[in-house]
Amino acid sequence: MIDPMGSCKDPLDEAVALHRRALGLRERHCHADAEAAARQALELFEAHAGPAHPDVANVANLLAAIREDLDDHAQAETLRRKAVAITRALPADNGDLDRLRVQSLRGLGTNLRRQGRHADAEEHLGRALALAQECLGADDVDTGSTENDLGILNKYTGRFEEAEALYRRVLVATQAALGPDHPDVASLCHNLAGLAYARGHFDEAEPWARRSVEIRSRALGADHPDTMADAAQVGAILDAQGRSDEAEPLLRAAMTHFEKVFSPDHYEVAVNAGNLAVLLARRGDTSEAEDLYRRALSIKERVLGADNDEVATLANNLAVLLAEVGRPEEAEGLLTRALPALKAALGPDHPTTQACAANLDHIGQAD
Image 1 (tube, rainbow, N blue to C red):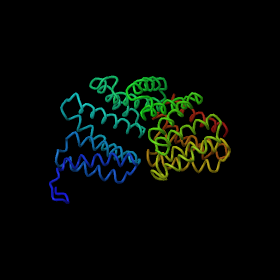
Image 2 (image 1 turned 60 degrees about the vertical axis):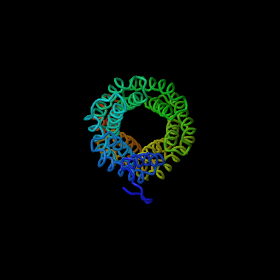
Image 3 (image 1 turned 120 degrees about the vertical axis):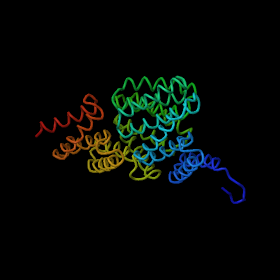
């Protein structure tokens, strides 16, 4: 390849430069440009290093992350599986290659968890953790990140004690390795807040959530999407405490921010629309609450699929609102579709499944 000055440019050097450029562009949320650079890097690596080279797997993981940022989990899964297949076929390394294997398995497991495929997610995350512990060590950062991802999965599937044990172990290790003000510490504080919220321990959740905002604001800035997600979590917790006047501005600001940074129909918009709907429904603003529930439901159905447990949870919440405003038939229809999805994804004993079943029974008794 010849550059404008007439000198030869090594294609692998160019691929490395494009990969770095894509990483930087993704950090700045320039997703289209990041994807274009990453795809160019992938083509160069495949052509000049070979289709089974570790750098191909590395760029495939980056492309998958970009597609996940844009809610395209299906294409991201294909890329994640490509990375896993490449790293699995390569000889043992006990170094950078083992780390790449762990990262690829972890990326696929997290992708599957986001799609609601919890059993498959647990299989891949479990494999990633076993490999990380064997090859990288119990206190390695990637080992901790994998344990954190397993903690998230445990939280979603109602195994709260297991989730908390993982979060707290990783928090201690991460603070020791990276310091108390690192963004990874903020992520663990965010997760501990979310776990306390899921358990209904709202007063315990608030300090974790506020610490996450403080750390991330200093490290990344107040307008970074991760910081905004932390602030939105504070809003949801405040609402659960009955402090809706404090909560509402945080939730509306986060929703507006994600509409601007991503798109009006992005997953993060749906998350905040759903939380804002809960607040408004509790306040009695049922018309706007219904609109927001339906908007969130539409986005999550498109991103995650109609049978996903997050979609079913939103349907349950909307059904409660509809029943309260005298539309029991619509509510029953939503609950009848939501309950099997929750049973399949979370099991019959999960608190959300049981709440949905109780809501359906209540409507049936009212009839």
